[in-house]
Length: 460
Image (cartoon, rainbow, N blue to C red):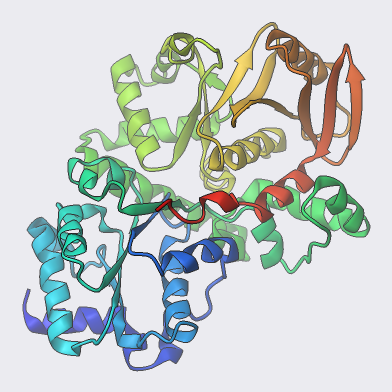
């Protein structure tokens, strides 16, 4: 790369070098829970990795962390460097691999001659081969660099070269806005302490307002750009471009998929039928895809953070992993689904189940379903078994309670939770305790305590 291009890129990516008022963090929506976790991580040597679905806010979080370093930690502006590796001007040089990073960074050092530690933010880095080895070598030499990476593919952590940073990195998974963040953007102040009862009592006078916003959130999801768009047509256009970008950049290109139309249709088919049970065979039937092809495509989608799979729960690992058993598939964001799939009206019951799954998925190693005569939506083990059904109504069907009681008896457990629209109660049924919790309160509580306090910093 010639020096003029290097200068152009560094200047374009880092307007804060000359004017803080032009920092790209200006006007962005604060993600306070993420920032609370990121700030202390700036004081340890570990590489910080932001991973998650495309356009969920990783770049914005980088910019907001940069602002924190400059304005609150008094780091010189020129020591905080942002490099965007999906810039159109960079694409033709990606084949250089780690040498591209070397050229960019060495040119930065020669041009700006920073004193002290450099905070290097490398955005969408997964397309640069051997970037992990490049960073690890500088890390091992104890160069004064703090690395912050972002990537929209799980390959960021699964490549062979990624192992060189094992034990030297801290991973933060970034998701679209949760419901608590959504309410903050909509200027709905939430009162009360961090318990279901306190939230219900303190917000009793604005329950109708919260429920109004919940129905909107279940429909349009939590992508900030979609939420902030006013017109329905604009929301639909944004969601369409997001889906296209995810499929093209994070599914087709990295996996060298030849039949783009085939995999795009499968993705839309899955979004249309989300939260339902599927087998590889049933998913492949409309396009006559083989089981192996469907299995591979689902793996590609999962690595792009687009779809998540829930398998049948059993204490027997072999039964849980049985590929013949149906699996339930969830999408990372309701809005991405609802604005891409034609429908007369969205099924808010399915949207509620999908939203609850995503909340559980963030803080659990695995989320399963269980099916006996009837079905329980979610079974988690963290560390003990927990059972949860979602019924987005206040007029519950008896099967919701019957399935919960059946599952609790099967696994000899005493308590289960059913998430409702606004109904709250606790009942003893056939010797089992069933707690009915309004979905809105459960989502707000989850949103407030999003990160487990014990996991903020890595162990020494």
